Image 1 (cartoon, rainbow, N blue to C red):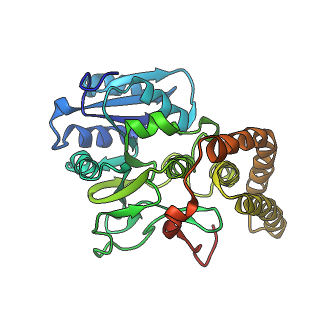
Image 2 (cartoon, helix red, strand yellow):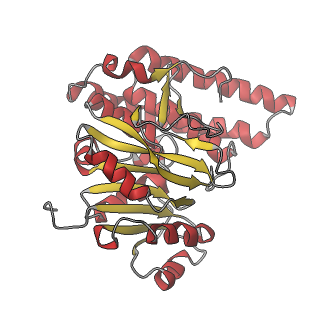
Amino acid sequence: MAPGDGPLASVIVVNYNGRHHLAECLHALANQTLPAGEFEVILVDNGSTDGSVEFVRREFPRVRIVPLNRNVGFAAGNNVGYSHARGRFIALLNNDTAADPRWLAAMLRAMDGHPEAGGIACKIRFHHDPATLNSTGLMLYRDGRGGDRGFRQIDVGQFEQVEEVFGACGAAMLLRRELIDGVGLFDERLFMYYEDLDLAWRARLRGWRFLYAPDAVVRHVHCGSSGEWSPFFRFHVERNRVLVNVKNAPLFLALAVLIGFFARAGRGWWYVLRGRFRAADGWAYVKAAVSLLTLLPYAVAERYRVRTAHRPVLERTFAHLIHLPPAKAA
């Protein structure tokens, strides 16, 4: 796409059986202060069976719908959306969000004022409790975990400055097309969870920066698609944490995270035997281990591409953004 051929921004919303979320999400996008002609909304539907596509076609005719015949996941769904996007900037937004009317304009303003930034993180509040923060940008911990800055903190004005963060939460972010074309969008093998940390790490190793824009505000139903620490959630978070570190982290950290996974899996089964975990939680670790063994050769090959073939910048350039882990591990 040649510059100027499309709108200023494309907003991609991935949906799977989320009709109950879509009215609020799409109404909020329709009410953005950015003129309607300057952005497009693309809904990628992952084979929903709840009438989502028919509902959007009827109620939101300006939304471009990309219907898929199966659930390809959050990562691949956004990648499909990007292949249809015409904007110079790409905004990713969860279907279980409600964006403030100034959300998109605020992100674009922050990006315009910082040409060195490849991505913009938002102030994301909990939908059910807007006084409590869900994310003000991604954090990378020294044990290889990712986390949301300000998670579950009461918003008392402590995050009101435009500042650098390690990355942006996948629930709501803005990316330059140049960043995506240079480092790729999401790793589809991750399906969902940790794909945003993986993207941020790859971009960081190529010299891109991420900024937090406090006036770009979104309310979000946290874990609205899976349920926090459900077996589905545990499988993807535990597996993807290892894969992302094998791909991106220094060797000692990648190995430590891999060993740590098997230690947590053993502890998980001990908790099952003690009645503290359900058997389904234990089996989530088993399934994650099997999937890891299958995907490790791919992750090692990606490690060579990310950390060697493209002459990455050194971690010391963003070491100030890597934090000690919180006292209690997830």
